[in-house]
Amino acid sequence: MQPLGRDLRREDFTVERIRRIADAAAKRGGVPLMSEEARRASLKAMRASVPDGHDAWVFGYGSLMWNPAINVVDSRKAHVRGYHRTFCLTLGIGRGSTEAPGLMLAIDRGGSCTGVAHRIAADAVESELSILWLREMISGAYEPRWVNADIDGHKRTRVLTFVINRSHPRYEGALPEAQVAQRIAQAQGMLGTNREYLYRTVRHLAELGIEDGPVHSLERQVRVLANETNATGD
Image 1 (cartoon, rainbow, N blue to C red):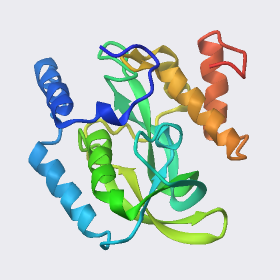
Image 2 (image 1 turned 120 degrees about the vertical axis):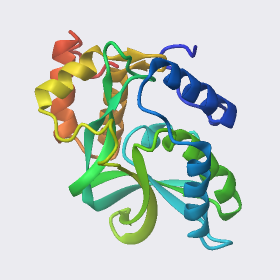
Image 3 (image 1 turned 90 degrees about the vertical axis):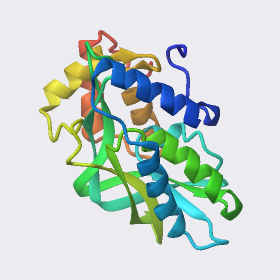
Protein backbone atom coordinates (compact mmCIF):
# COMPACT_ATOMS: atom_id res chain seq x y z
CA MET A 1 0.00 0.00 0.00
CA GLN A 2 1.26 3.46 -0.85
CA PRO A 3 1.84 5.97 1.97
CA LEU A 4 -0.86 8.57 2.56
CA GLY A 5 -0.44 11.79 0.68
CA ARG A 6 2.20 10.61 -1.76
CA ASP A 7 2.14 12.18 -5.21
CA LEU A 8 1.65 9.91 -8.19
CA ARG A 9 4.76 9.10 -10.22
CA ARG A 10 5.08 7.90 -13.79
CA GLU A 11 6.52 4.65 -12.39
CA ASP A 12 3.14 3.97 -10.78
CA PHE A 13 1.46 3.51 -14.15
CA THR A 14 2.25 0.07 -15.46
CA VAL A 15 0.07 -2.60 -17.03
CA GLU A 16 0.86 -4.90 -14.10
CA ARG A 17 -0.36 -2.35 -11.56
CA ILE A 18 -3.58 -1.78 -13.47
CA ARG A 19 -4.15 -5.54 -13.58
CA ARG A 20 -3.77 -5.68 -9.79
CA ILE A 21 -6.29 -2.84 -9.40
CA ALA A 22 -8.69 -4.63 -11.75
CA ASP A 23 -8.34 -7.88 -9.79
CA ALA A 24 -8.99 -6.08 -6.51
CA ALA A 25 -12.05 -4.35 -7.98
CA ALA A 26 -13.41 -7.66 -9.22
CA LYS A 27 -13.03 -9.21 -5.76
CA ARG A 28 -14.94 -6.30 -4.21
CA GLY A 29 -17.72 -6.80 -6.72
CA GLY A 30 -17.71 -3.18 -7.78
CA VAL A 31 -18.03 -1.56 -11.19
CA PRO A 32 -15.90 -3.51 -13.73
CA LEU A 33 -12.87 -1.68 -15.03
CA MET A 34 -12.14 -1.01 -18.68
CA SER A 35 -10.59 -4.02 -20.41
CA GLU A 36 -6.99 -3.86 -21.60
CA GLU A 37 -8.20 -4.36 -25.16
CA ALA A 38 -10.64 -1.45 -24.96
CA ARG A 39 -8.01 0.80 -23.37
CA ARG A 40 -5.44 -0.04 -26.04
CA ALA A 41 -7.99 0.62 -28.79
CA SER A 42 -8.89 3.99 -27.26
CA LEU A 43 -5.23 4.97 -27.00
CA LYS A 44 -4.51 3.86 -30.56
CA ALA A 45 -7.37 5.95 -31.91
CA MET A 46 -6.24 9.05 -30.02
CA ARG A 47 -2.59 8.54 -30.92
CA ALA A 48 -3.55 8.36 -34.59
CA SER A 49 -5.09 11.84 -34.34
CA VAL A 50 -1.71 13.39 -33.47
CA PRO A 51 0.28 13.89 -36.70
CA ASP A 52 3.79 12.42 -36.70
CA GLY A 53 6.36 14.99 -35.68
CA HIS A 54 3.83 17.17 -33.84
CA ASP A 55 3.69 18.04 -30.14
CA ALA A 56 0.52 17.34 -28.16
CA TRP A 57 -1.13 19.53 -25.52
CA VAL A 58 -2.98 18.02 -22.55
CA PHE A 59 -5.43 20.07 -20.47
CA GLY A 60 -5.50 19.43 -16.72
CA TYR A 61 -8.22 20.74 -14.41
CA GLY A 62 -7.59 18.70 -11.23
CA SER A 63 -4.51 16.79 -10.14
CA LEU A 64 -3.19 16.84 -13.70
CA MET A 65 -2.51 20.53 -13.07
CA TRP A 66 -0.21 19.99 -10.11
CA ASN A 67 0.82 16.34 -10.39
CA PRO A 68 0.86 15.40 -14.09
CA ALA A 69 3.27 12.45 -13.60
CA ILE A 70 4.26 12.69 -17.27
CA ASN A 71 7.20 14.38 -18.96
CA VAL A 72 6.23 17.77 -20.37
CA VAL A 73 8.29 20.55 -21.92
CA ASP A 74 5.93 23.44 -21.17
CA SER A 75 2.98 24.19 -18.89
CA ARG A 76 0.73 27.22 -19.29
CA LYS A 77 -2.51 28.64 -17.98
CA ALA A 78 -5.38 27.65 -20.28
CA HIS A 79 -9.11 28.26 -20.55
CA VAL A 80 -11.66 25.89 -22.08
CA ARG A 81 -15.19 26.90 -22.99
CA GLY A 82 -18.17 24.55 -23.03
CA TYR A 83 -17.16 22.53 -19.96
CA HIS A 84 -17.03 23.25 -16.24
CA ARG A 85 -15.08 21.67 -13.37
CA THR A 86 -17.23 19.65 -10.98
CA PHE A 87 -16.93 16.95 -8.31
CA CYS A 88 -19.20 14.43 -10.01
CA LEU A 89 -17.27 11.14 -10.03
CA THR A 90 -17.66 8.82 -7.05
CA LEU A 91 -14.38 7.50 -5.66
CA GLY A 92 -14.00 4.23 -3.77
CA ILE A 93 -10.20 3.88 -3.90
CA GLY A 94 -7.23 6.23 -4.01
CA ARG A 95 -8.70 9.08 -1.93
CA GLY A 96 -11.85 7.30 -0.86
CA SER A 97 -13.08 3.90 0.32
CA THR A 98 -16.06 1.62 -0.07
CA GLU A 99 -17.27 2.64 3.40
CA ALA A 100 -16.76 6.38 2.81
CA PRO A 101 -16.57 7.09 -0.92
CA GLY A 102 -15.09 10.39 -1.96
CA LEU A 103 -15.56 12.45 -5.09
CA MET A 104 -13.20 13.16 -7.96
CA LEU A 105 -13.18 16.09 -10.33
CA ALA A 106 -14.20 15.89 -13.95
CA ILE A 107 -15.35 18.41 -16.49
CA ASP A 108 -18.97 18.25 -17.58
CA ARG A 109 -21.03 20.01 -20.22
CA GLY A 110 -21.71 23.73 -19.88
CA GLY A 111 -19.85 26.78 -18.63
CA SER A 112 -16.09 27.14 -18.83
CA CYS A 113 -12.97 26.01 -16.99
CA THR A 114 -9.49 27.39 -16.33
CA GLY A 115 -6.64 24.97 -15.81
CA VAL A 116 -3.20 24.12 -17.11
CA ALA A 117 -2.17 22.98 -20.58
CA HIS A 118 0.93 20.77 -20.64
CA ARG A 119 2.88 20.36 -23.87
CA ILE A 120 4.30 16.93 -24.69
CA ALA A 121 7.22 16.95 -27.12
CA ALA A 122 6.67 15.20 -30.43
CA ASP A 123 9.21 12.48 -29.70
CA ALA A 124 7.54 11.69 -26.37
CA VAL A 125 3.89 11.59 -27.46
CA GLU A 126 3.80 7.78 -27.67
CA SER A 127 5.26 7.16 -24.21
CA GLU A 128 3.43 9.94 -22.38
CA LEU A 129 -0.01 9.24 -23.83
CA SER A 130 0.50 5.60 -22.87
CA ILE A 131 1.06 6.67 -19.25
CA LEU A 132 -1.93 9.02 -19.35
CA TRP A 133 -4.16 6.18 -20.52
CA LEU A 134 -2.99 3.99 -17.64
CA ARG A 135 -3.80 6.86 -15.30
CA GLU A 136 -7.08 8.25 -16.63
CA MET A 137 -8.63 5.39 -18.58
CA ILE A 138 -8.71 2.63 -15.98
CA SER A 139 -12.45 2.51 -15.46
CA GLY A 140 -13.88 4.21 -18.54
CA ALA A 141 -15.37 6.97 -16.39
CA TYR A 142 -13.68 9.57 -18.60
CA GLU A 143 -13.93 10.15 -22.34
CA PRO A 144 -10.75 11.47 -24.02
CA ARG A 145 -11.61 14.39 -26.23
CA TRP A 146 -9.94 17.13 -28.25
CA VAL A 147 -11.20 20.60 -27.36
CA ASN A 148 -10.06 24.15 -28.08
CA ALA A 149 -8.29 26.06 -25.34
CA ASP A 150 -7.15 29.64 -25.04
CA ILE A 151 -3.57 29.39 -23.80
CA ASP A 152 -2.12 32.39 -21.97
CA GLY A 153 -5.31 34.26 -22.80
CA HIS A 154 -4.81 34.54 -26.54
CA LYS A 155 -3.48 31.50 -28.40
CA ARG A 156 -6.27 29.05 -29.36
CA THR A 157 -4.85 25.54 -29.39
CA ARG A 158 -6.25 22.04 -29.68
CA VAL A 159 -5.79 20.21 -26.38
CA LEU A 160 -6.55 16.70 -25.19
CA THR A 161 -8.64 16.45 -22.05
CA PHE A 162 -10.73 13.91 -20.17
CA VAL A 163 -14.47 14.63 -20.02
CA ILE A 164 -16.87 12.78 -17.72
CA ASN A 165 -18.64 9.79 -19.25
CA ARG A 166 -22.23 10.52 -18.27
CA SER A 167 -23.30 6.93 -18.90
CA HIS A 168 -20.76 5.51 -16.43
CA PRO A 169 -22.15 4.05 -13.17
CA ARG A 170 -19.80 6.22 -11.10
CA TYR A 171 -21.18 9.46 -12.55
CA GLU A 172 -23.07 11.32 -9.82
CA GLY A 173 -24.38 14.31 -11.76
CA ALA A 174 -24.84 17.65 -10.03
CA LEU A 175 -24.94 16.82 -6.31
CA PRO A 176 -25.93 19.46 -3.72
CA GLU A 177 -22.87 21.36 -2.51
CA ALA A 178 -23.48 20.38 1.11
CA GLN A 179 -23.45 16.69 0.17
CA VAL A 180 -20.27 17.10 -1.86
CA ALA A 181 -18.59 18.88 1.07
CA GLN A 182 -19.62 16.16 3.52
CA ARG A 183 -18.23 13.38 1.35
CA ILE A 184 -14.95 15.15 0.65
CA ALA A 185 -14.49 16.01 4.33
CA GLN A 186 -14.78 12.34 5.37
CA ALA A 187 -13.17 10.35 2.55
CA GLN A 188 -9.66 8.93 2.69
CA GLY A 189 -7.78 6.20 0.86
CA MET A 190 -4.36 4.85 -0.01
CA LEU A 191 -3.29 8.09 -1.75
CA GLY A 192 -4.42 10.38 1.08
CA THR A 193 -7.50 12.36 1.98
CA ASN A 194 -10.08 13.64 -0.45
CA ARG A 195 -9.66 17.00 1.32
CA GLU A 196 -6.03 17.27 0.27
CA TYR A 197 -7.03 16.78 -3.36
CA LEU A 198 -9.50 19.67 -3.06
CA TYR A 199 -7.08 21.92 -1.15
CA ARG A 200 -4.25 21.41 -3.61
CA THR A 201 -6.55 22.11 -6.54
CA VAL A 202 -7.70 25.37 -4.92
CA ARG A 203 -4.13 26.37 -4.11
CA HIS A 204 -3.03 25.80 -7.69
CA LEU A 205 -5.96 27.80 -9.02
CA ALA A 206 -4.88 30.64 -6.74
CA GLU A 207 -1.40 30.42 -8.29
CA LEU A 208 -3.10 30.85 -11.67
CA GLY A 209 -4.81 33.98 -10.42
CA ILE A 210 -8.22 32.44 -9.66
CA GLU A 211 -9.14 33.40 -6.12
CA ASP A 212 -12.88 32.76 -5.98
CA GLY A 213 -15.23 30.24 -7.54
CA PRO A 214 -17.27 27.08 -6.81
CA VAL A 215 -14.32 25.03 -5.55
CA HIS A 216 -13.26 27.87 -3.23
CA SER A 217 -16.73 27.91 -1.66
CA LEU A 218 -16.54 24.14 -1.35
CA GLU A 219 -13.13 24.36 0.32
CA ARG A 220 -14.49 26.71 2.98
CA GLN A 221 -17.30 24.28 3.80
CA VAL A 222 -14.97 21.28 3.92
CA ARG A 223 -12.51 23.03 6.24
CA VAL A 224 -15.32 23.79 8.68
CA LEU A 225 -16.57 20.19 8.59
CA ALA A 226 -13.03 18.87 9.08
CA ASN A 227 -12.17 21.44 11.78
CA GLU A 228 -9.43 22.82 9.55
CA THR A 229 -10.22 26.49 9.44
CA ASN A 230 -6.66 27.62 8.68
CA ALA A 231 -7.14 28.62 5.01
CA THR A 232 -3.42 28.32 4.25
CA GLY A 233 -2.89 24.83 5.58
CA ASP A 234 -3.31 21.56 3.77
